[in-house]
Image 1 (tube, rainbow, N blue to C red):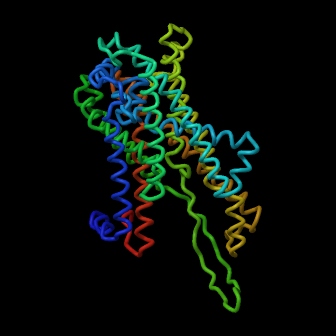
Image 2 (cartoon, rainbow, N blue to C red):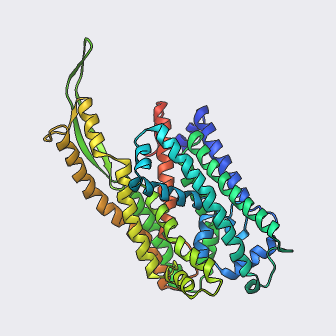
Image 3 (cartoon, rainbow, N blue to C red):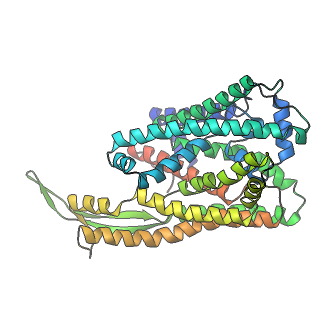
Length: 426
């Protein structure tokens, strides 16, 4: 495997893509350490220590790679873009004009992407304002001053900086997708979580709970093994191609298979569910600073330590798994393509019966796949909460890291196979 990966660097195009991706991720990590203008770096660190790594702050800080705790230019991370993507994806189901755009191919998708960018800017601007006043409300608790000579102009400067940081991250993610290896947005989240691993290891090692220190490594290993096993699991549907006459040539028929993965949606449902579940406690934290009892109750009700959060996240993971499976695989289109090129499933008539057959198989695969994702995301979090550990790594984080790593490796594998090199996933 190592020799094959090293061999990939001998191919100029692949080497350039890998190095380009690494350079963008390095720039991202640098940006998470550059404080926004007008922010006192020492004060931000003091507030981060006073808030701790548990709760909604720990979760948001995890997805921003520690940038939120430092109030860096990349403090918001890529989460506003993900939230905007969720909103646009759901609106496509209920708004006819957006649904029409979705069916227009690349041109329509480009318009939807543009709308997503606009919405991202609006969400990032609103979040930036909220975070500035939220962190300022923690000054007394931390015994420090976050913004010296607090003025409206300084607030505007900080808000513009944080919003611009999110827009820059959105652009960097798209650059990785276009010119690098892997999905850019997923890799940015991957880099955020991986960058917090040393802090998580230190939190595990210094934890006074001996039971937690013993069982946590076994939980992590078990989750990793289970994720790899299910992510790679697939149902192979046999496909038979009949002989065809094209022009004056007779093409040879043959046999192949259609691979249907247990988890067709990948890690996207987990990322989206975590993003959605972060909204209620974030709003509660922002509004709750004004002594709003309902908002304070909302923040505690959906705290990552509570069973309400775990239940809600599990439900959203299942829903998003079904939703994105339907988006990524259309049985009707697949059946039409098979019929067009002379392919058929043995024992199943071409056309509509084939589409219904594929739909039934997909439904049987998606249900256990969705339950698996929900269970893997929830169980480690429940065990951590039972031990009262101040630890922000849960099943969601592990799922995202392993899922993104596998998807990126598969893309690199495909690049190698296109150039007749031996892959490394065998």
